[in-house]
Image 1: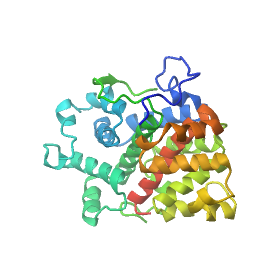
Image 2: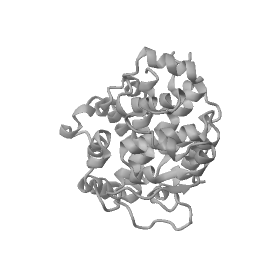
Image 3: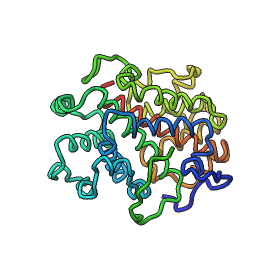
Image 4: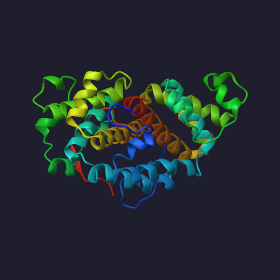
Length: 172
Length: 143
């Protein structure tokens, strides 16, 4: 993995964390991304705490140091505390997380590891717990988080060691 | 029809979340209007992502019309003369991206940058994330 950012020249200085990043170079996608990201966190049927569970599971599996350090304030306000975050490990099935939360993590793992391998029994458990709109929301949330964590890794410049926890708002 | 809804296409399923579908569609559509990465180039990369995932659903989808020759030769792009240097640099990047983005080398990134510039490299990386994600989502949904 490259320690040096692969793109660093001519970045904007607007004060917006997304527009001032390398993403700001692709002007046509910035506003659509920000609006879609806003919708994922604010407009979907899942709570922000549920979306954050999937985001952090993805962050740990992709090993995006920035993504792992971030905590979104909207998720904390929705009830996600560090005691829960500490249970997002490979042993989450033995944790004290709720069955609903464990299903979110397991679905995220299927996306990350083997999306064609879901069993009928697992699908049935999902449909008993989640509406169709919630499954779509969870899928799109995982896709978006995975897309931009892989983007951060691909762009290089990722610190090798974990960063301190950072509480931030969803970029607007 | 998939395992959690009677909808028959990926877009129809996304429409089951009406508070998200319009912003998703705008986001997805924005990638096909980029000044830094031509749509035909991104379509080649999208199709290579589909091949690497063995996703017939994504392979059968046609976002942008390509020549039959370019579609048919895609699995052997590195040995084929039908692809440009730009396309080959991006397809090489695509393959490593799909295996592990941590394995992308500076040389592979530079090869894309030398063809498309900084904005083109970022655009390709974002687009690959979207294609990779939508391929995996379609597989989760049973397509």
